Image 1 (tube, helix red, strand yellow):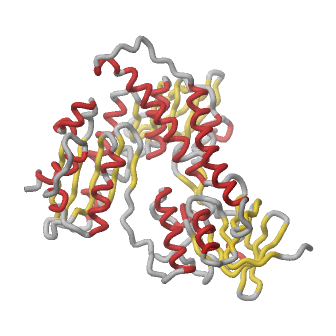
Image 2 (tube, rainbow, N blue to C red):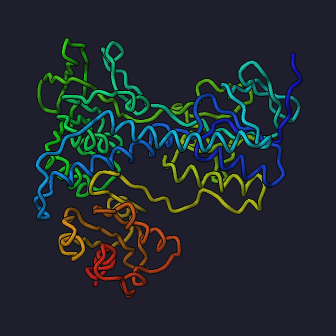
Image 3 (cartoon, rainbow, N blue to C red):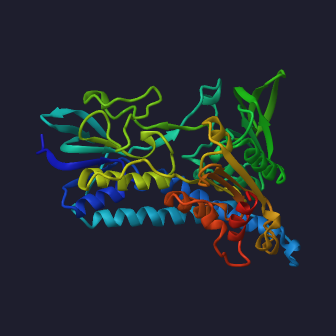
Length: 461
């Protein structure tokens, strides 16, 4: 057997936490190896954030072109070159992926190891890890293996070809009629993308509302905005079976309070959640605790129950967003090579990149009331904002939830053009622990959408 390589830290997974952590630890003088089985960049670069936001941008251009008459312009016809839209997104992701690869190839520390990593037990106080056909020894290990699409146990699903988060970019033919199972963030974003490309789209969701983590009024508004673009929704509907047909697929639905019905589609997109990639890591050989769902149990320091084994990204549970994975790297750098002060006790914003976007931070109104908080709630319609009217972007609203006793912001929903940008005013306010009056009493540039982020607080007085 070849000589086993020894490392101080072995990072398993080249995602948005693993890569910056590898470089940062190496700069701190640690001997580091980064293991990646497939492509660097994780889900964000390869099929998530980067390509989806690229195609959403193309879809928005097409949508605006179709609205040209509203702006006093004449565009006779808008035609979509669907393969070219996907190729543009692919080019952007490849640029990102190649940049990550080239930087790692230029250095011996961190060392990039290609292959599937699997724990193989202990070597004294260290850990043995198989990487492909080789074995390495490491003092500490960081698990950043991400997730994959959770495929539900629906009768007949295994017998049909379907689209999911990992393979949508490979589907070069525009679906004529697309059925999307799942009304969460992925399902909503992709429904609007495909509709604006020209597909007829139906979204099927078991729950009573889409975007299940949001307040009912916010989720309903998002749905109505998409329905205005002729996206169909079937709520409280469970797909019980799927059959292959000559022209696509047939889905049998059981809707609450009604008998089974059948709908036809040329293509099927499954967006029913994510499953952790922890089932083939050999975690049982070193005693790392894993939940029934495959989530690795970790504390606020991202430490597992086994000393020296850490976790980052999707597999640690909690908020599953690229920006939290990136912050995980800062937490782990603090724990492994710093003063240990940084933890996962943090304000985590997120967004649904529909158009208009939904920027979110903190508690919903429902969550705040369930926790027994005394709250003040205000809502400001974007159609009242001058900049929104001038830009023709009047859809949506801003909703804030404020602690009635302390005047501190508990949460906000910004359903507006550039909502994912605007919400950061509230993110910074919450991180500063400042009262909402700081924004209310400030001077914001006119005319801007940011004035709306201020105006909403005036409704509280």
